[in-house]
Length: 209
Image (cartoon, rainbow, N blue to C red; front, side, top):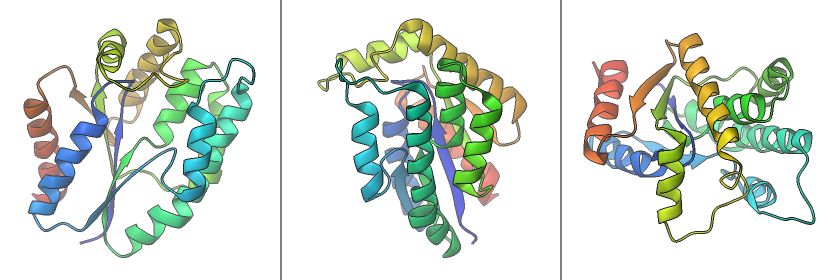
C-alpha cells in the first residue's frame, strides 16, 4: 500500500494529541506501518525551532513575519527528513499540524498575506499535500478551557487573546469549505470514544474500503 499523509488540525485544546494516539493504536492493530510526528518539532532542528516559537518571552517577542518564516523552516526540514522518506517506503504518517495551521494561525489569526503564506508553504513542501486532513472542530473557548485544566503552563500561542483564537477557528472553517475533498470536519466536542469512532470510519472509507 502506498504511503499516506494524514494530518490532524484544529484550535488549541481540540484533542489532536489524544485522537492521534488512539488512531495510531487502531492502525497498528490493523497491521499498518506508520509514524506519528508533529509540526513544529518533528525533527531535531524542529525541536529547537519549536522552543523558540512557543516559549513566552515578554522581553524578546517573536515578530509575526519571523514567526511565519520559522514555521516554514521547520516544515522544509520536516518534509525532507521525515515525510518524503517515510511516504516513499509506504508508511502512513499521522502528523499533528501541517500547512493549514499556518494559513489559519498566521493568515487569519495574524492577518498576514494568504498569498505569501501559500507561496512559502509551496516552497517548504514542494507541493506535497495531505492525503486527508482531519479537522477537529471545537469552539475556541471550550478548547482553551480544556488547556487551562491541564497541568502544563500555556505556551505563547495558547496565551493569545480569545479574538485571535476565534480568527483561527474562522480560518479552519473557510479552509474546510474550500478544500472539502481533502479536509473532513469532525465534531471534537463529543466524547473521546465517539470522536475516535468517527475518525476510524472516515479513514476506513477513504483508505480501506
